[in-house]
Length: 159
Image 1: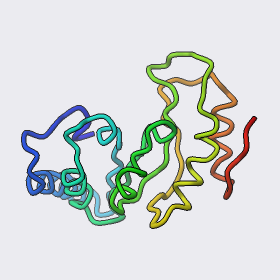
Image 2: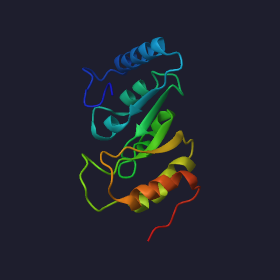
Image 3: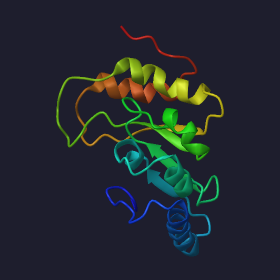
């Protein structure tokens, strides 16, 4: 990603908007139907990305031509603190597993309710659910539940 772990040299929203528009212009030149699929991770951990900077980047691309992955939504959902990514379509993602580490854990309540809450929230810009784990072949209950969530309109109650 263009800005993940790469902080722009200034926090001027006009500069950020110009950068984003330039990236999209290059994508569009290569493919008229290009859609920028961008990790939203930077918005969750980097204090640089305050609302003016975030809006400048997200609004530098025509609505519908960028989709943000809300990467760690089961623990730190950015959609809920950014007014639905300020109207930019996003995918509610479960990260769950960092660096392929194998541990027996999972926030089942958040997985069973988070995508539903995001989709039903006012002015929802959520367009899907996803998994972006950094390791596989572990915790099948967690991944089965997340896979199942695409078919539910109501919270799944887990015990």
